[in-house]
Image (cartoon, rainbow, N blue to C red; front, side):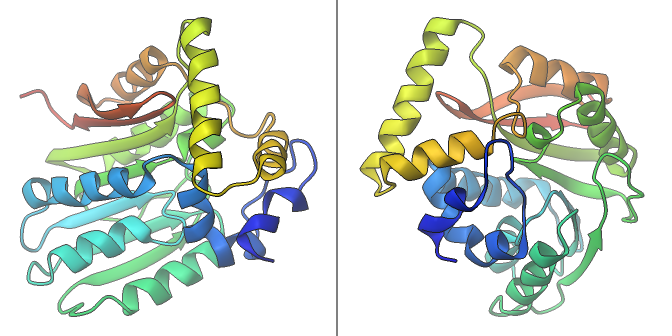
Length: 247
């Protein structure tokens, strides 16, 4: 299966992170999420401040490990520990291979855990940086989103940080309409065919359920994190940072 065939393989509401999806995931996500590489670069750069030498990163919904690979490659000298969590074992197998391929992996250590992120158990020691990139949106029940972030907060270092990336739903329907069309225009301008855009939208019906920006911030606070702050936003796509304690 190539990247262009991914969405067409699923019927309405049938999207799953299968082995076939895992094989083309890096190309697929870059074609599906506007400014995906900008978001990843922003997270990796933030690790300069948030992950000290000997520090710990927990990636909740790690997929193929793209984010942790970037952090590891950026800081070969810091001997960072990584714990990657995901429900999809094919994704985690690719994440393990990707992490092993990081140049100058050095003293970095990486463990992977195949779990439902809202159920746990999380097995890492206190994390300096916890990541949840494009994962909460796939949990239909808002209570599960809070529970996922709560479990992560319980395993955060006292001064730890959280970074969440999500597809969000603008609260005003006028902005929401503009956001949807602009996202489609972006994908089309980057080579995604109209039929593939429509097929992906059909496959995600009832599977990907965006929250509003206010709902997302409320969920982060309800889970015990403090001071959520928008770090990046483009229409429907938002990056939010928070800390384990107030400053």
